[in-house]
Amino acid sequence: MKTRRYTFSAALLIGVTVIGTSSLSSNQLPHTDTVNLKKSIASSLPKVSVTKANVGNFHPNIIGFGEAKAANELLFTSEINGRVISLSESFKTGKILPKGTVIAQLDDTNHKQLLAKARANLIQLELELLEEERRSKQALSEWKRSGVANKPASELVLRSPQLALAKANLASAKIDIVKAQRDLNNTVIRLPFDALIVTRDIQLGSVLQMGSQVATLYSTNKVEIRVPLSEAQWSNMPRQRNAFSNKHKVKLTNAAGDRSWEGTIERAEKHLSSETRQRAIIVSVSNPFHKNIGLYPGTFVKAKIEGKSIENLWEVPSSAISQNGDIWFVDSNKSLRKAKAKRRFDVNEKTYVLPITSDQSLTKYIVKRPLSHLEEGMLVQVTGERSDAE
Image: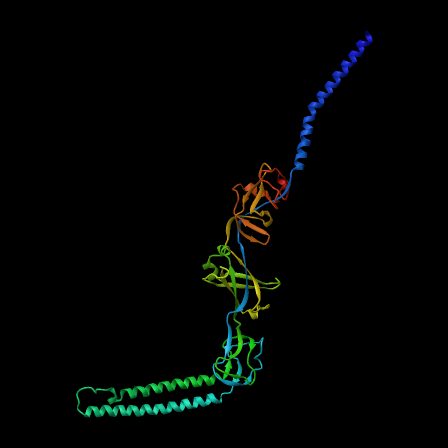
């Protein structure tokens, strides 16, 4: 009996101990498991990299492209007929020559003859006018002596038409002399403005007719670049009065990006292209050939114009705009949310949009690169620039 009693007591003691130990473990387990569970859940959440949107006033860079062209491009032609008897040594392609430079000489023999004939004809007609004036006075005197009170039935009686014809012939002869003198002067071919010789289209001995091409000339005082802009770009342009009256600056670079020039907005076209439906501005560069790096006609350039200041915009990485045009951000509950991006303009790898919410704290948690599997309301783990602000 004693042996059984001891055995029962031991078993009871062991049972109590086991129950006590189990109770103690069951009281401690929930806290440890909760911590571990939270860590496990957090580590298993999708990770998103976030960045902060810069909020402020920004100037868009308006980018356009165009070709530099001389302000004046002239197919220079001969005004008279004649044979080329001499050419200037400087009359060669690529040369820049000042206005009035003699580039060629035509044979002037025929033109001297025509001028001499015109002068002789003028003298002859002056004599005829004097004779007609004398006849007209004589006719008037005879009519008065006749005693007839009425006017003559015809003006021919007093030789008025003959006198008018003599005066008209004399006036025409004077104009003939002016033309003959001008044609003689034009046997010396001079440049009409400061010019770059692009082509030379005559040779020594060439026979020119009126309208024959002599050369292709480009003016050198300035070049102009026609830069077409879209409707959206026009909406970001400075006000026209300021842009055009104050000669708004434009940065120009070549295709390689290793040369640059400064131009000004000269004017704006008042029509849309029928092909592109765009309207263009005209950018000019003065004295393009006299700069350290010449801006030559034919150069294709990129034009960058600083637009008007736009207030209260968000600056975000261009990668933050999803393919559907949404901006994703993380709210205070670490849940994903999205809003449609109202894009104003892009500069380099930055996109500028209107605010998507009035809650400025959310600007700190813009998803850098939203992936296609993201869903609104999804819990996420924040990483990146703002992860330390959790």
